[in-house]
View: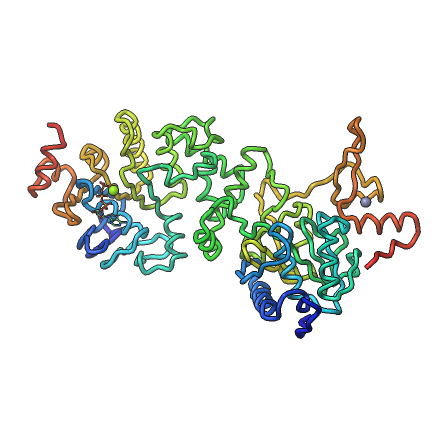
Length: 293
Length: 258
Ligand SMILES: Nc1ncnc2c1ncn2[C@@H]1O[C@H](COP(=O)(O)OP(=O)(O)OP(=O)(O)O)[C@@H](O)[C@H]1O
Ligand SMILES: [Mg+2]
Ligand SMILES: [Zn+2]
């Protein structure tokens, strides 16, 4: 993956200068060595405002090489403006092949979803993270959250789950559901639906999380246990749907609900567009669409 | 009082710049004993209490605690991790301002349950049941379990703070003017409650107050502080009925109505 500096027009290879990439790689190595621990890094200004995946882009830029095949998704879709522009950016500055097919990608940068297609060894999933600190809403002081992590003092996290049950009768958190990584650090999985949490557990792929604004990187190495927090008598559960996808008939994927006409008629569609298309292809017996680079 | 002291304090000194806030304080606290610290404002009571409870590092001296879990420990030489564990399992700390000792943004039940969850309790129903029991013991209506302390009166908050601390069955509780700033009638109820809890749970406590009436009601032994030094100490009744030091005589004469 590492690449020597090759000037590419106005840009260095993969946009970032080599020194910045080395620094980010060092942070990544440390993050991999201590699963779930947030490693600060000297982030760089990117050609995008915060909130548009600058943390994920910097991580991707630091790890990508010419032999990689990149997939970028935003809420499960490859074709949103944001996903398309990040994909084009790397095609241009890093000269990589791109794909929409999960199985063909070596690096997948994502916002808000984990692909439905099970990931494999050798794949890297790069998450864009808005707020890396899972305890932030409970404890605004940075020095104190650091101490809580250092001492594994996580009572306050459990307090927030208790409070949710007291108020709503169940743990109402559906996104950014906190996890315990390798039995040690509590981690924010970024705002993915809790539906995706089980996919993080012992995944064969490497998970890298980049937070641009707060300049933090954390990681979950392959096959690391990732447990969603819960109570014995209120165990963690994922969303289920009684409907199935209107396009591919899937019952096991995460479905987005759409209102399709002014009578309020509702439709359910897979949030993962690649998964949906592959299944439509299978249903019609036709080969799945070949995505354009 | 047999066996060995629960807390042994020797030559404790704390300075702020060149102001000595407490100076050369030493005493033993025995299991089941309630020690009162009285003295005028600025005499060093809070500073001393914070040094005892490991919340503030003294400039000199030692605080040895006989831990149920790990035997004799030097409070100020423990790692931060162990000290924090000790403070939320074997100790309690009741602040004068309940807002500092409570999480104002979560329900009474969550406030009481936090220590249980911090030490690994993971059964929601059982945590809730224990929290309900404790609400009853501190005389808060059980249907307030899911209400936040922001909706509670000052007296209720203080009682909730007491429950939040006692739920882990601590051995030793530090209290800094637990009834300060409350109405007299509200104070009386909390004092009654504290007296009952201390007796029933065989708690040991160090209680800071500048109300000699509170000291008379709750404490077995009394230390009188002036300018950071202990000027007199002894059994509470003796100190109050037959004060030896001129400063104590002045305190008793001026504050305790005959
Ligand atoms: N953080 C601090 N920085 C500087 N000086 C302090 C600090 N805390 C306390 N002091 C000083 O130390 C002395 C003892 O203060 P302390 O708060 O312990 O008194 P106290 O007996 O608890 O008073 P009160 O009855 O008003 O609560 C005072 O002179 C006070 O001004
Ligand atoms: Mg004070
Ligand atoms: Zn579908």
